[in-house]
Length: 321
Image (cartoon, rainbow, N blue to C red):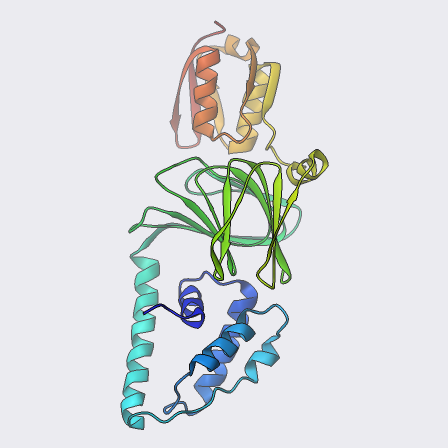
């Protein structure tokens, strides 16, 4: 049987995939339900649809949700329902504990306060967070995907890995990519996605197929469930990448400059076997490339090899070809 929107919302709540606004409203409603005698309570389809709408709508407040009272419908014996309810609670707690201890790994949660804060995720992806933003990253052992829940504003540079999709959940909206760079802005009214490189799919619980977004395109997901696609310009992109190390294009730059930029962007220390390597000139574009890919490109231009251990990169060779 297909799960209702309400059931899917509860699953997202248990697995930490709801927005902060949804979480507050859900927990406020659950607190009220716990204080009432709900032993004879059964949610009708109409109740579920009404409660789902109130919990997810950006127009409702916590006070609106607290006032919700589902209709009652007697079924079975109240004592049987008490036992059943207890089992559900125990199962829910057990499932939640299992989910976060057994089925996920490489968990990371960061909350930024102001300005721009750079986060390097466990897979090597970069997130440039602006203002008060929140990101939680984790990987699922059973499907190999990379998951992120996000609120706020950020520029993502996702490491390319075709076998491990990267999924960003922003409340009701899901962003799915393999490896690309894009900007996200979220607020109670809409979610705004701007793609710089690659292709991104933006979907929602009411539109599972979603819409594909290409470079130089922007999509706004509105609270009524509609998608609006727009084009972007260089001024907007410059604003998105401002005060970040996103732009890594070099034209006849000395390796000394390139090394300094790599160290700053990826939080690594670069050591050279021959100091003359610093004087070599390089023309290459490392924009939207991972640390490893950037180093690989350097080996194609210069007569060098590299190795990475912890946060230290060692470049060995004679340097200029």
